[in-house]
Length: 291
Ligand SMILES: NC(=O)c1ccc[n+]([C@@H]2O[C@H](COP(=O)([O-])OP(=O)(O)OC[C@H]3O[C@@H](n4cnc5c(N)ncnc54)[C@H](OP(=O)(O)O)[C@@H]3O)[C@@H](O)[C@H]2O)c1
Image (cartoon, rainbow, N blue to C red):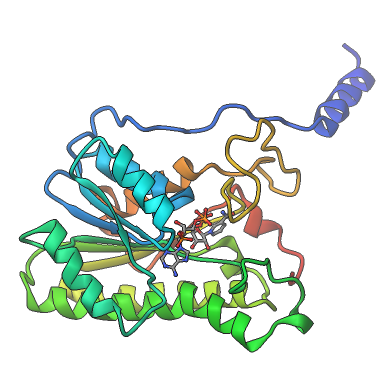
């Protein structure tokens, strides 16, 4: 083949959209089934999307898992279809800060002795209190700011504070993990409350990573890029998940993000502290400016 042909073929290939149909959708983890045996895991916002995928993965690896959410219908659906008593969905609005203590007691009641060992701070939203996606910086209202920042950042801060204090008092020798779900937007210039809240998540992950490591509490985070969930409005049953703006040329799927969360909560992530792992297909490396 002459060089002109080679160049033409290469250019044709580069122009062609890559439609990915194979993703890491693992619900069985060969060799790792018992990795989280005896561990109690709380996944906030685990009734769908990334949280639910992480919860299923922890459960598949032997953990007792509790997921939280607000939609009564979703919670009922999960509890009715759960194949195991060690997978339970609990009504809990994490943004209700004064209510957190009572919910933690309820949680202990379900887990029984030992309490929670792994906290996955996943609950998050990019929508205002009416379920609309925030548009532009000049239209952001105070209530919208409060709704998004309280859910994504304030709730996470106070949950970490309460769990850490409790863990330091009870069985202080036990190893505990916290994994915070950040976002690739936490590495991009931000003008909307969502992105700004995720910068906060990156900051507190580093801060608490350092602060809590001496107490056997390992804090890390995962920053997904566009992932096919309700939030990103590209549902994971869509046939074509290609997205040319991402170097990997496709949306992530919840199971791929779940794998990163499990890694950080496992013994494999033991020496990783205060790190926010970007699981974004290279998206945050392409940043050109604010939203
Ligand atoms: N999908 C993406 O492209 C993407 C990208 C970067 C980062 N993330 C982050 O990944 C995390 C999960 O997002 P997702 O894409 O899986 O979103 P999702 O499909 O919208 O799921 C969000 C989950 O959080 C729950 N939730 C929301 N507010 C809550 C609250 N106040 N209290 C308790 N639960 C609450 C929702 O249930 P209820 O509504 O019933 O409460 C649902 O279970 C979020 O932190 C998000 O910021 C997602």
